[in-house]
Structures are given as C-alpha cells and as structure tokens.
Amino acid sequence: MTQTRPSRLLVMIWDGMRPDLVSPELTPNLAALAGAGVVFDANHAVVPTVTRINAATLATGAPSSTHGLPANSFFAPAVDASGPISVGDGDNVAQLRAAYGVFGATTIADVVKQAGGRTTIVSSGTRGSSWMLHPRRTDAGDVILHPTLSTTEELAPIVARLGPMPADGAPNTALNAWLARAAAEIILPEQRPDVLLFWHDDPDHSQHKFGFGHPLSLQSIQDADRHLGLLLASLDSAGLRDETLIVVASDHGYVQITQRYDPSPALAALAGDARVVLAANGCSMLLRLEQPDDRALARLAAEVGKLPGTGVMFSGARGGAVVDGTYPLAAIRMDGPLAPDLLVSLNWSDDQNEHGHGGASYGLGGTSLAGHGGASAWEIRNTLIMQGAGILSGRRSNLPSGTIDLAPTVLTALGLPVPDSMTGRVLHEALSASATDGVPTAVERWDERSAAGTLSWSRYAGHQYLDAALR
Image (cartoon, rainbow, N blue to C red; front, side, top):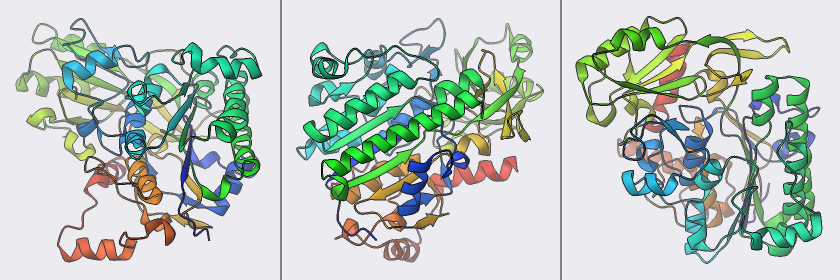
C-alpha cells in the first residue's frame, strides 16, 4: 500500500484501448502497473464515444452540458451555417468559444497553474484533442509537444537531441517512440513538470485502418506499452516514482464495423418539411434541425427509427420535448447550444470478428474497418488504471466510474481544490489515507449523502440506462 500523497501526476491516454486487451502477454508494463494499483472494471466513456468530447470531459471533470462540446463533429451555425464542423484540427476553437461559450470549464491544468504548478502536454493525437486537454495553454505559458501545435522554441531543444520529429504513420510507431523518448529522456527528468499528460494516438489510429485485433493493431498496443515502460523507467531513474500518481486511461472502447448505415432514406422522407444537418461521428450521428420544430423532429425520429441499423436514440435538448421512441439527452448529461436535436447510436452486437474479438456495429460511411462513437457496451467500457503515490495497491473496483471522475480524483489526491464545475465523483475507493487527508473517507462520504437523502448515481444513470436498454 502506497501511503505518500503525490506531488506529481502522469496521465497517459491510450486512444481507443479496450480494457479486455490488457494482459501480461500483450501489455506487460500496464498489467504490472494494474497489479500494483487499482483497476476500475466498470469504467465508462461519455456518449457519444468519440475522442474530443471525452478529452474535454477527462480534462474538466464535467459533462457536455457544462463544457459545451457535444461530439467530434456537430452543427454550429454561428461558425458555419452551411453544414457540420469538426474540432479535429482545433482551428475553430476560438470561434466556438466566442459564439457558444464552450471550453470555458476549469481543467486539471488550470487548477495546477493556479497553485503555481506547470503542465506539459505530449500528444500524437489530433490538434483538437490536444487543445481539449488544456485550452488555455498559451495563456498559462505551458509547453506542448505536438506535430503541429508546438512552437519552434518548444521543439528546438528536443530536435537538437533526438533529431527531427518523424512523420505520422500506421502503426504510428516512429512518431510515438520519438515523443515517448522526449518525455522520458528530457521532459520528466530535466523539466520536471508537475503534470504530464501524454496522449498516445495508437491503438486508435491503427484500429481504424486495420481493424480491431489485427496484428498491426496489436503491434500498436505493444508500442503503447513499451512507451509506458520508458516513462516508468524515467520516473525511477529520476527519483520521482515515489511521489508520482500514475494514470493510464483510454477515451473510449472499440467495435469492428461490419455493416454500413445509410440515413438518406429518412432524410429524404423529411425533405421539404425541414432542413436537417447530419454530423457523422463514427458509430453515431447527430441530427440538428436548422429551425426548431417539434413536429418535424418527431417525424424525423420516426423515420430514422425505421432504418436497419438504428439503435438507441436521444432527444430533448435545450428544454425540448423527448419525442416518442427516444430517451432523454439529460440521461447522458448532454445539453447546451451545440447539442443535437436527435442523437442516434447505431445498432451493435456481441458477434466476433475474424480475429476472435467480440463487438460489432454498423458504421456511418467512411473506410474505417473498426471504430467507435456508439452506445454499445464495447464502446462505452474504457480503460482506467491508477497506481503510485496516494493509490491503494492490488485492488479492483466494480463501482460505477467514468471519464468524468478522473479530474476531481487526481486533484483531490494532489491536495488541490476541486472546482464546483467538476461534477464527477472522487474515486475514494482507490485513494490511500494520505491522499484523502482532510477529506471524508469513502464510507463517510456515502453515509453523509444517504443520510441527507441525496445519495444519487444520477451522473451514471445514463450509462446504467443504456446498459439496461441495450441488454
């Protein structure tokens, strides 16, 4: 049992890493870390299970209704009235902030900065997901190491020692290895930031291209594990391991795409009555009426519900009615000016693919052989493992937990204030006595809520709701 309150934080996100692939054979470093720490067996991503909304939730400890981002792609007419936009390139973040007030929620990095600390971002992910982790990075003067977001000044000392940053690839072995070396050989031992957030774009990058469980996709997981090993060895050699809280997480799970979904018949049936903007998000889609119209929305939901491949649907954004055949968006805590009028998760099954892995789904267009975005158990379940300073040892938790809980938990462990906007739960079941010094224990905390009549799993109700509905 580790008893020391952490003074540093390392978070490594393996994009798209499904928890059922963690094993001593495939991921020896992560499996060893899990055995020495706490594994969260009932952890959940945010729906829709795409990267940018989950990155924002991870950083802010807040749902979409608070941080404002509804998905990877969505309709934002004040920014572009012609069709959906993507935050993948990150170049429209300032416009979205000005027009809709998104990205204003306090992040882990914001709290660390207010306490006088420094956060460094290392990322091979998209510009958008990197922005979501620390939207006020420039104002804070914090460093980012990223293929397109880094300044010449940030890159120069790294390039001088490691050579030029490699180009993107699939598997993205060369680029991720370069970034891992930079973090392990220079950033951790020499720059010693208080927080290091490392976004590792594989296995997601490779799984999209080659399929779930393909040998090259598995190679990309081995890459991530090897790079985790470099970071852990660096902490050891720098004498920082005993004071560091280590988190390995993923932003979502994964499914194999076995059929393609075509929404055009439903949209054609509504043509002439209302303009509908469709934003594809892998195994889900966001539909937004150009003008609010309850009757048109009810008809749209009815037409979409007839299509092969339609799964669970949600409506009721911005105080609107929850139409027949749909669940409330409030159940998954999605609201705000950018929320869709209709969120559609595509149908899925437990069928195995050619590589022997369960989880199959319809997909929206594109060429990806595997993907995510929907509300299936295979996509919602994601990886969360904690180990190190302030964390108990050799534990597994099957209490409901989620991406939203990471920020308040690590801030509590670090002894930093948790802003009111962070409505995720502190995962007390993972924290040692020293990490909760001055904070009620888990049992005391639940007893207090129960006695007050306010004990509620409401922030997980959406996930429980979905599990019940889909099973």
